[in-house]
Structures are given as structure tokens and as C-alpha cells.
Image (cartoon, rainbow, N blue to C red; front, top):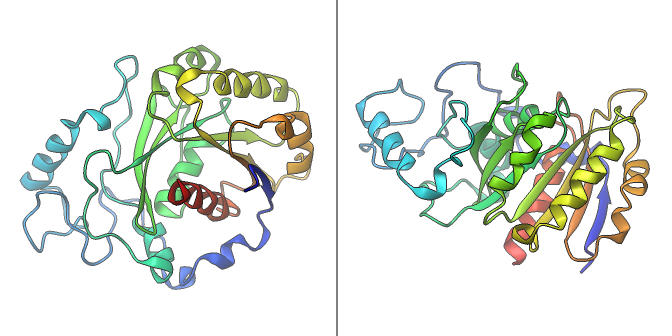
Length: 271
């Protein structure tokens, strides 16, 4: 097995069967969910696309009581959606179908999304979830969402990347299986800082078994560095103890994101 690989974003969207037939949901508090989805503990026939009600609040409270869904005490996560990645699931439905129940505790693969501020971390997370661009502000604390791909569940923590917050990243490392490092491909000046943060993470005992997915974001910009340039600067070829993959992408259009997520899913099912 090759530990290190690289990819380009070009034809990745061709992998998404039926994507043209699945319109992106609108910016509403409760986007429509695929038929058959039901909140944990909800009455039969109660879809997640319906307005919030007492059973939904009760289910959300029950889920928040599970330790593996609780945020570290040092951060204050923003309000998050508790429904599965509806648009992304619809696009992949022909390739494996959507699970029709929430996973049992411990069934998810924990993922952290890290990177410097303004790299595009939160934009990428919500492209995964809704297949559309959302307006974001600098993340203070974290966002947490569940992404489901071909029966593989990922619990994804998007962590703020401002300099003052990087010292708190290690509070999220416990039980992490995947690191998604998002890089602004146009930010040449701060690439040394990204490299320093990457190797600091890889040296942490709690991440000794983690796989690394690097998204070289903003590939649509004329002055962006290629994945090869970034790979060479970060000396990724010297990483021997962690499976890694670098993927060019554009968070605004979603190009390259499915290919990266598919690599992560293949790693999860191989272990």
C-alpha cells in the first residue's frame, strides 16, 4: 500500500452519480432530508425536513448527553445541524445508498479539520454537508457535524485557525483518526507556519495513528501553488508513519472535495 498519494481535482465530480438531479437545499433552518431519514428517538413518519418540535428537541438533548458528541470544555462550539449530510448523501446514493439510522455510540470515525485562518476550513465542511456555499465568519471555538458516505460515518470537528487558538488544537486530538489540513494555496508567506503546525501535530502522541488528508484550497486562483509545489515545500515524502494524501480543491465550487473524502472513506474501511 502506498502511504503517500497526490490527486488533482479535475474529473472528481464525475464520481458523483446523480448529482445533477439533486438540487442543493436552500438556506433554511431545516433543509429537506432524503426519504426514510428519521431522527433518533423520533416518531415514525417524522422527517428531519419538518419544523423543529418537541421530539426533535428531546432527541437533540439525548444526543448531547453522549460523551463522544460533547465539545471540549475549553471551547464554545457554534450551533450545529444534527441531521446527516442530505445533499451529499443523495449524490452518492447510487454508489452505496444512505444509512437509514443514526450510528451507535463509537461507530463514527473522528475527524479534525485544521489549518490557518482564512484557509477555507468551514466552507469545505459545509460544502460536504449541503453542496452549497455558506457565508462564514472566523471560527471561534469549533463546529461539529456528521458526514455519512457509503455507510461510513465521520464525526467532523472544524477548529478555529487563528494564531491565538492553535494552542487549543491538542484538546481535540484524543481518538482522532483523520486530520484534514486545509491550506490556502495562494498564501505563500505563511506556508512555513503551516509546515510547522503540521509536524507539530504529527509528533503528538494522540495522533500517532492518524491519517492525513491535505486539501490545497483555492486552486481556482491564478496565483495559487500547485499540489506538487506544496508537497515539496512541506516535504510530505518524508512522512512515513502516517498515511497521507494531498488533493487540490476549490471550496467555493466543491471541486476536488469528493475525491478527498473518498480517499478518507477508503482508509476508514481498510482499517
